[in-house]
Image (cartoon, rainbow, N blue to C red; front, side, top):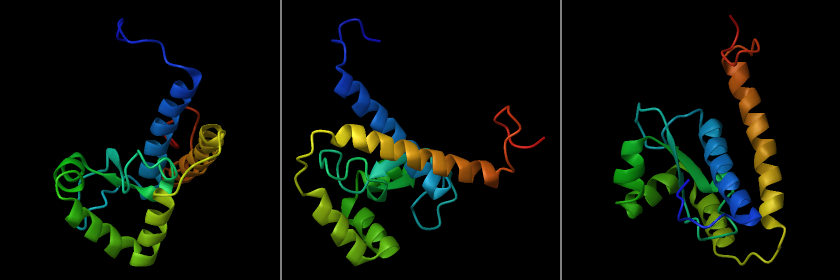
Length: 146
C-alpha cells in the first residue's frame, strides 16, 4: 500500500470489492472468451459497455464484456463506435437501448453498494459452480477431479 495514500473508508473498500467481483463475474459468465468476433485470445479483462461513472450499471453484469488485453485497449477504448456496433450486433439494439436507459438513470438508494455486493457474490458463486462443473468438479485442491 502507498504510505501516502489516506486509508479507505468502509464504503470505498466495498466499492473496490464490488469492482473486483464484477470483473470476475463478467469473465466467468463469458467462459473467459473475448467479446470480439473471431478472437481466439482468452479473456483476461472486463470492460464496461457504459462507463463506471454510470452508477446504475457500474456493477450490472449485463453492462460488461470479457476481453483479451488487445481488444480491450485497441478496440473498446480507442474505437468506441466499432465497439458499440459489435455490442449492438451481439446483444441486439433493444437490449443495448434498455441498458443505456438504465445506465443514465439516477441512483438514489443509499444501500446500493451493499445490495450490489451481495448480488455479485451470489452471481459469482453460481458462475464459479458452473466453472467447476465444466472442469469436472473439485477434489478439494481447486484443480478439478484428479
